[in-house]
Length: 123
Image (cartoon, rainbow, N blue to C red; front, side):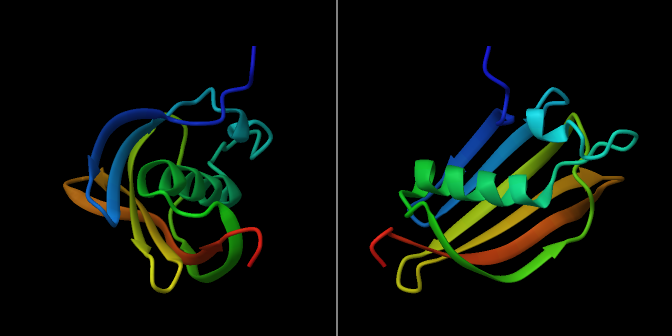
């Protein structure tokens, strides 16, 4: 059996340059193992990986990472959390903006956000 690496998709709202995905970040996702033993949280590198994966799937973006701008990890994403991932693709700049958020106590919590440059392997 392959290790589980992606969350359970609960909802998807899509337009040409934007997609809003709602996930359950299942506790059995492989990336929680060892990060950290007594306080598991979703690694930042996994959040970036998911942003690239889902942007290529829903927005047809290139998959090659070319650089990062303005990245903030503000609140940990814990096992079994329900989060939204907002992805916006700027084709002219080859930049992907991402935001992971959830609801808590009637308000919105931002877990992480940033922008990254994506391109083709030949660039």
